[in-house]
Length: 620
Image 1: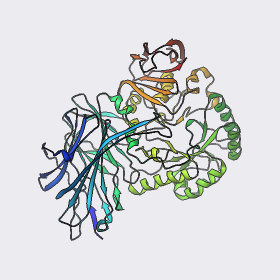
Image 2: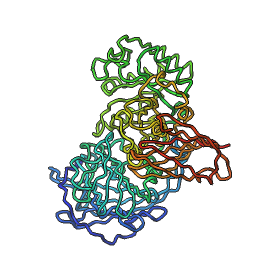
Image 3: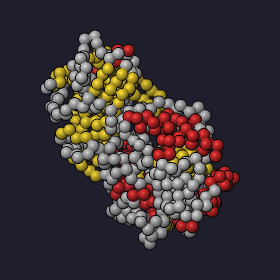
Image 4: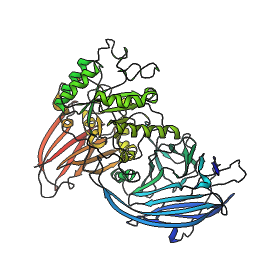
């Protein structure tokens, strides 16, 4: 049995240059705008290295860049997968398909691509085979490393990648170094920490691009670090020991003429994941959620009554219901309220669940990773017996190969017990919800718990939300907010999450003016169609989403006041719609205005600094 060690390879900036590529080693998107090609080049100290490039509209999007998994094994037969390679075959195929998600930002998703599979070998007749699988979509290009099953190389020890992204000069990046971080625009050079993906880029020619990953369910987290001016290279969060067959996560490069298209086309990430594995999905229910902050029976029943009034689907019991979440003695199989959360400890959880069910409402329980790691196989069937509908996994480990595999296995296990999930803290999605749609949402975003300003909020749709749903934990009547009420009302339209955690802070009594939150009362959380009408990161964004015959529209600005004029051409021609606008009135309150419109009309949003506008259009 051959044992292959892929170790960290020293990174050097090399002028790779362009070369003619045979058609057999080139693949284009169905519309012909994107092209990916590969060849072998002799580089200094690295002969016959695989080098790829990507063009968009006949201009370089990714300049010639190295690929591979480099090594310096201690064994007697050194094998490397970044040099001394030979191409032994290349095959192509195409797919034209559509599929319907269990839930999503659209009712049907196109899955149209051209695929190229390039097989490479290292050494004359020894070792095994590494394949590069490439798919070119109209929305972007994706590629991955794959090792077919081979008895000569069953064990794979992966230390690091040699996946480079050489960018055109003057490219700007919207950079953050962790999933819950804030963003800043940076040149691509001298980053002290690697960048979290999705990494959104603005090229000097006006093209927008995004580098991200898909199907990162059995592979370490990948970040991007600078390796030279305008040069990025993949950085793995840890080593891998696996057996063939084995595949890396997909690396995805999206391209668009405007930044909103990156968000509108984010279904590409789901396309790169396997289809739904859950046969009966009738129990998977998206909806709106409110947190029960008192951890008391009385508070829970008051919240259930508020949920009935405001069309909220779930109530959530957060940290503290089974003791201090980080203490090893805390037992998530029984109720033992943390006295720091409720000194009285008067939470009758079975009675709260019973009362919620009697009113048609469901319950979600928070469980910290310390209890999950010790008790998961006990908790899942127990909560199902209790009548719990879902769990929020808290502070789970992310990044390493081990914990990545553990977490996605924990999602599969939850599905067996009909439990929906919300994964919090640093976990960021890569499309696994297509395969296991009980994973309704996850955090991995700098949301209202961090009290971000409006400018940050205008960046998120073009960065983090490209990856998929995010639990932003919205707030409304909170003095710590620096954004207007109109801004907050609009966010759940702009920020997709099948579980929308509204009113994260506060109790029902904190919302005496129900008309101010009227817009949220009938707001869906999943959609039949999504359109990004306009926007620029750091300035403003406007997103329209359709459910049935009705449209919901959210628009926000940065910390600067702004007037935005929007076309309603997305409405069905020849039909009239009743339009209701919820906006800031200048005194700190919400003003509602109504009128009748058609697809020929326009809508103006006069936004205060850090303001927003929420709109519903109901077809007459």
